[in-house]
Amino acid sequence: MSDNAHQMERNYSIRSLSSRGGSGMNSSYMVESGFLVSSFTATMFIGVLVTVGIVLISLIIVLTVMLQSCESKNSGVVQSHAFVDYHRICNTHAQHAELNGLKAHDCPPFCGDLAKQYIKGGLYARELNVTNAVIQSYLGAVAAVDNGLDVVLMDADDILSLHALNIDLFTNRSDDFDSESFEEVNHLKQSYLLQLYMQLQAGGWTLVFLSRKSQREQNVAEEIMYSAGFRSWYSLIMRSEDELQIDSRTYFSRRREALEKDGFRIAGVISSHMDALTGPFLGKLIFKIPNPICYQYSSAH
Image 1 (tube, helix red, strand yellow):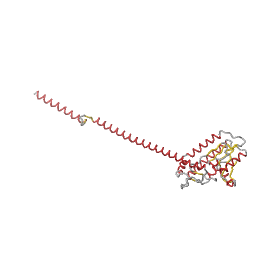
Image 2 (cartoon, rainbow, N blue to C red):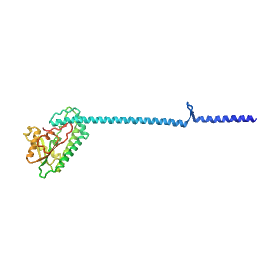
Image 3 (tube, rainbow, N blue to C red):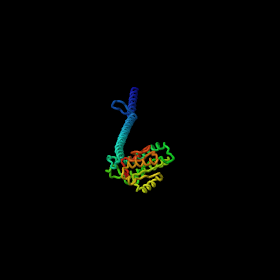
Image 4 (cartoon, rainbow, N blue to C red):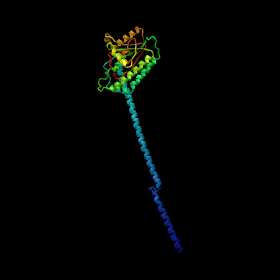
C-alpha cells in the first residue's frame, strides 16, 4: 500500500514540474541557434535596430544637405569670379573709350547687364565714397591761403549732365532702357558731388567750375546748379563761340593756363571725364570721379 502511495506521489511531482516548465515557455522564445531569448530582450534588440536605422537616415540627410550647401557655395564662388572677370573686361573697354574721347563705345554685349548689377549692388556708391575719402585725404592735408588764389577746378558738366535725360548704354544694342538705374545713378552722383563741394568750400578753397557747353547756355546752367544746391562759387566758365571750334582737351588746357596767368594756383582738378584731366597746366593734383561702368552721360565735347 505504501509502495502505491509513493508511486502516486512521484507521478504527481513530475506532472507539477511539467506544468511549471510549460508556463515558462509563454515568456520565452527558442531561436534556431538554440538560445532561449526573452520577450524583453527581443524588444530591446528591435528597438536598437530601429534607432540605428533612424540615425543612419538622419546622417544621410545631413550629408545631403551639406553637399548641396557646398555645391551652392562653389556655384556662388564661380559666379563671383565671373562677375569680377566681366567687370574687368567692361572697365577696360570703358577706360580706353574715355582715354581716347570716343563717343561710339563698343563694349561687349554683357556689359549692359553688368552695369545694372554694378549700380544696384552698391559698387558704384562704394567707389564714390572711396574717391571722396582719397580727395579729402590729399586736399584736407593742404591749407588754402587766405588770399583766395588757391583754386580747385571742378567739371560743371558732371552736375549739368545729371539733368539731361539722354543717358545711354555704351552698347547701343540694348533696347531695354533702365530708367530705375538711371535715377539711382543721378541721385548717387549728385549727392556725392554736393557733399564734395561743401567739404571743399568748408576747407577754404576757391571753387571754379568749367563746362564744355556754350556761353549761350550760361543762365540755364547757373539755374540748374543753383537748384541742385551749388549756390556759391568763384566762377562758372563756359565756352565762347571761338572755343566751340576746338576740342575739349585744348579748351580745358587753355582755360587752366589763363587762370594761372591771372595769378591763381591750381591745387586740384576734379572730373569724371578724361578730357578735363589731361594736357598741361593741371596744377598739383588730379582726381578722377568714377563713372558707372558702360554708362555715358552726354556732354558737348
